[in-house]
Image 1 (spheres, rainbow, N blue to C red):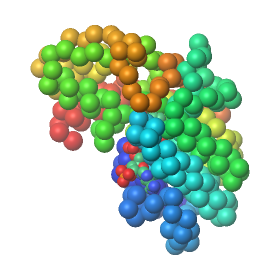
Image 2: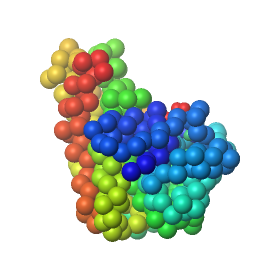
Image 3: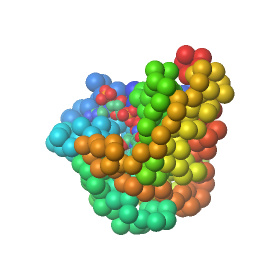
Length: 294
Ligand SMILES: NC(=O)c1ccc[n+]([C@@H]2O[C@H](COP(=O)([O-])OP(=O)(O)OC[C@H]3O[C@@H](n4cnc5c(N)ncnc54)[C@H](OP(=O)(O)O)[C@@H]3O)[C@@H](O)[C@H]2O)c1
């Protein structure tokens, strides 16, 4: 199967390349310099040249706080770029596998969000990702959008790597304890996307639409940090656990407002035979890789 991957250098892009290594699929992977998804003629040229059987979009504007003052670029990538990809996928009648975010919600819920729940993004990033979802649904029929959350991996910048670095530098840390969500390993997400691609290749009927893909156990940033420190200490990555203080979001103001509660229900994933990310197991793997300097 000919798979077109955009955003190959991001966390998901790199993990997707890793999971493809043991397969026979032909991967055509592009970074932002090789293919700017917001450039209509570049997108059209790549589709014409590659003629993919399926499209996986790992490209996105992901700087949540910067987006508040850079809304034009956030929309250019997350809304316009996504629409350009969706139109090309529709032209070739190929499936479009896309990734969105829990930040489309306002966080006022008290139980896990369903894909059908009302959206109400609190910041530009979430709003631009929501616009991308809407554009895809308008432009093509064969799409799967996986809303994910709190993504971590051995690659790029993420909460796990930041906490490990800070634990090496400081004796004490304060972490927000009143925001709840589901950590997600980018490698699990990549594997899930590969499984979706292979179901399509095997002509299994896929139920197109919107799904929630995230970790199986909700926690707070504070709880996540505690798990990271405990595992890092156990694996000898840090020599002691820093003293961890729980603080409120008010005590850690950021330019973009985050949802207080963005736990998502992954129930409907069973309709496409996918299991949620087992993030505690994955955390072990990622910290082991960090300990080896990978
Ligand atoms: N990270 C999270 O916690 C999180 C949470 C919820 C949802 N998500 C979603 O999950 C997906 C994967 O996220 P991630 O963590 O892998 O993101 P990431 O590490 O920030 O990677 C995003 C990639 O997109 C590329 N990109 C940006 N603008 C582009 C453009 N105009 N054309 C082509 N490529 C472009 C970036 O390349 P450059 O570096 O060259 O700009 C980068 O390699 C995204 O859709 C994101 O919105 C992420």
